[in-house]
Length: 124
Image (tube, rainbow, N blue to C red; front, side):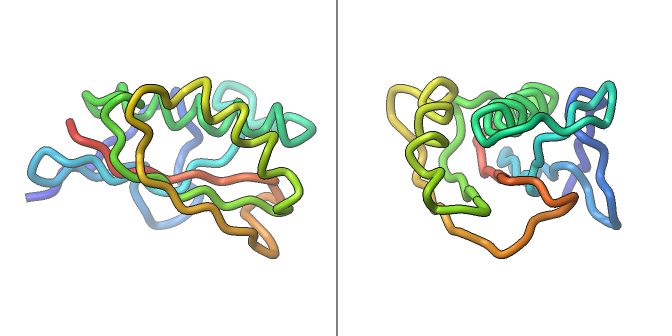
C-alpha cells in the first residue's frame, strides 16, 4: 500500500504527481525545486537556490516522519556542472555523518527555469 505525503512547507506539486510517497517504511520524494512555499518566489543564484531546494526537501522529509539523516539516496539535477562545488558546500550542511549515495547530473532545463532540483529516498 502506498501513501501520499504532502506539506505546505515545500512547493506544491505542479503536475499530476505527489510530493512524496511512503511504501513499506520507505519515503520516495519527487524532485524538489527552490520555490519559497509561502510566496512562490525563487531565490537568485545557485547558493540560495541550493539552500532553498534542500531546505524544502528537509521539510518534506520531516512531514513524512523521516529526516535528512535517514536519507539513503539522492539525485541532484543542476543546470551547470560548474556549480558542483557550490552545491556540495550547501549539501554538506544538511547531509552529515554517513552520507547518502548520490548522483549529480547536469541538465539542459528544469521546471520554472531553476538552477537545481533534488529528490531523495529515505527510511521512515
